[in-house]
Image (tube, rainbow, N blue to C red; front, side):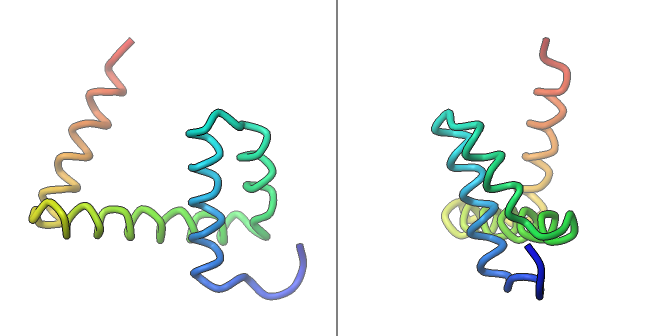
Length: 84
């Protein structure tokens, strides 16, 4: 894909599509969606914005602060990294 970098909403939608395809067991679809990002920077931005939005939604529903959520997420990641 050539031309200008897609706007933020389009990048977030692409990233969400990758996650959805992966969760429904469609690795080929996820790979195809990943290939549509024009640059690694656009891909990184899309996934960063998706993560920020997802954490904001969880924060709004849980009442936790963002620091509390990030701390909890960090502990979960550390647990999973140690699991066999």
